Image (cartoon, rainbow, N blue to C red):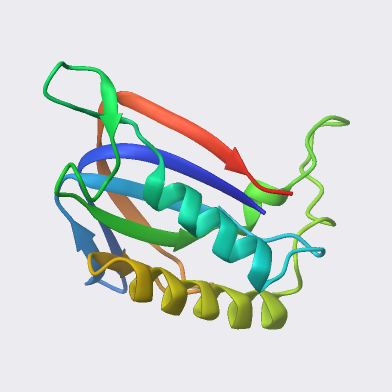
Length: 146
């Protein structure tokens, strides 16, 4: 399971011309699910994302998490994060969780995230999403859990 976190000033997901999720200041999370992933690992990752301190505190240091910074979370499924890219010139998506399983797990993780934090927005699983963002910094981190 992988999450690419981007600290943003604003972000939104558009599907078929409609905004499906939108936040102001906060975290845009691209979430990739692998074949071996499960709800327990996902909860651990969501907890880490919500507690991860990469917003500036009063001293200008990365000391605040998204809640302390008064931000939101935009959670977007992205199976391409699971691609193997070490060999050749074409990504291998073999490690990605099959779509039906991934959708069920993604929806459980969205529900869990919303139970832990009230400012969670999403894209639409497997849709052709247009993601708009203003990266703050830029500040981007790749998180994984075992």
